[in-house]
Amino acid sequence: MQFEIVTDSSCNLSDSMIREFGLHILPLTFMSDGKQYQSYTAGRDSDLKSFFKMMREGTVFTTSLPNLQDTSTLLKGLLDEGKDILYIGFSSGLSGTYQATAALLDELKTEYPDQKIYYTDTLAAAMGEGLIVYKAVKMAQAGATIEEVHAWVEENKLNLAHWFTVDDLMFLFRGGRVSRTSAWAGTLLNIKPVLHVDDEGHLIPMEKVRGRKKSIQALVDHMEESALEPVEGQEIFISHGDCQEDADYLVELIKDRFGCTKFEVNLLDPVIGAHSGPGTLALFFFANKR
Picture 1: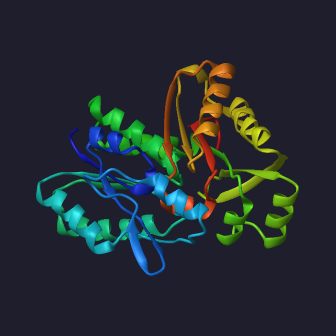
Picture 2: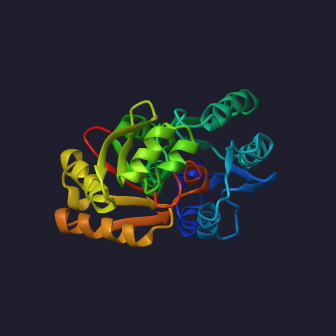
């Protein structure tokens, strides 16, 4: 590539894809009992199953932005090598990561006036952000300039649909996304929410269905309503909170209904997973609207 792509660990791409693409990752952090962890460590395989195991056993995690000093070191290192930078960031509607990194990049533009520095708020999360990064890399590998890739991301990010469901409403309650009453009532009645990320990058409840399988089927129904044609040619990305069987079921539903053959499936990153919990299942595709 003619330039370097920097993104956050919240993009939720697999370790192998990150290595293959040569991506530079800003790791968000999560904490429990005074101990801090990084969501991604270069050169080390991520152990996401252990994270969800700890959550199931009762560990409560809080989350934080990437370390700004580490971010500065990474970005300056690339610029000192004469590299141009495109930063593709986590939704500003869900985290302060983008604003903090963009402010730092504004300062670096003054320090490095001869180099190109672009950044974009994807207003996306998890493998929704990851799907945008994936497309950006493919464009760059095909010879697109940094300006062309940046423009494409800005023009297409609001066509990236996020649809997801959770298995346990109590995790959304702890994260302040639903009330205690809604969480308890939903649990007792086996109600599963279907949510999406809106045009401002916020997490929005859209509907409630009874039962896990119906909530997964609802994700596919929303895909049928809005997915860009030809649907069968799309790359479909899926994140899950350590519920591989449900992710496999979702893949089969999509194959049966649309004939899609290109899927990327990965465990959900800890910063999103800390708020949505084990059993989260998220579907990402390009649509005529979010």
